[in-house]
Length: 281
Image 1 (cartoon, rainbow, N blue to C red):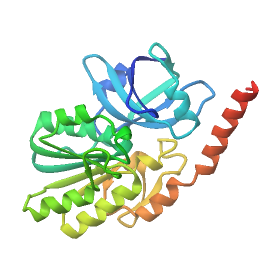
Image 2 (cartoon, rainbow, N blue to C red; image 1 turned 120 degrees about the horizontal axis):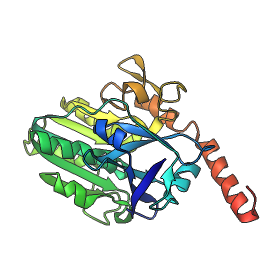
Image 3 (spheres, rainbow, N blue to C red; image 1 turned 90 degrees about the vertical axis):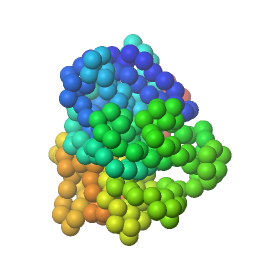
């Protein structure tokens, strides 16, 4: 069992958990993920590692409530435990040691961007420009953490309720128009956001990484749910990624895969609500 040491509300639907998992923390790297299970009969779900502390033996994960399992996780409290907490899985994100790197985190995607920025700042001579955003101010997460590891932090919201009313692509265009040399872009967030960034940076000739974690299910390559085409070849987000070359990803296919289980997800959540209201199990 993996005990929850602390819990923090980031938004009404997004929670941060610090978990006692020394063996995972010992090997964890930015860009990797864990597979968790709340209870014996529960669903196995992949969660990106949002931070880790090798000395304390802790791993931090951030969960946004979108379905039944994420809802059950977010109901856990400090002192509760995960049944399973397996990892680290997947390949680490390549870490730049010099130059200017733009890190774009959209919504929940700010969580996996943070450890990447943190390690770049600690290990290299990198100038980090971080763009973090959300639909509204109330949904923005980890601003203090991102500010602490960024040389420049630009906050954007879709509705203009906080920071600038803009998209990551707008900021990247402005940087290039001002003559800023960008060596690499890393964009993590909704598939449509990553697609827009990758489409732009391809025209600008800027190497770009994205994360395919939104379509992962099993996390071991066995289920095939995260199968996608990268550079014309079949890859699996969980074992070949989740960090991938954004210019090679077939985003149209990835977006379709991300919607495959929407009906089942809604059915499970509706059934859970019915059982709670009716006193069933």
